[in-house]
Length: 75
Image (cartoon, rainbow, N blue to C red; front, side):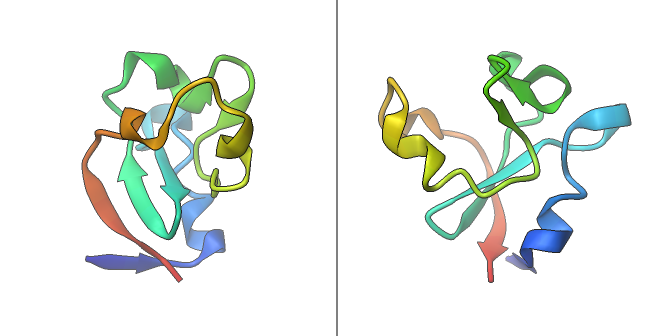
């Protein structure tokens, strides 16, 4: 698995045809195919290319919603 720094993760923001990746609890997920993450935006509240571990605490869903391909680790 690829290791991503936070700076590298920021490049995968889903804009301009780039993949949409997010990190959660040290794992990087590819959300590109998710209809909920079009253009790297989720409900106008979150953006791809970020570590969403802390932001997830207030989410109306549990972590099982991240049933997407794991592409790496955040280091």
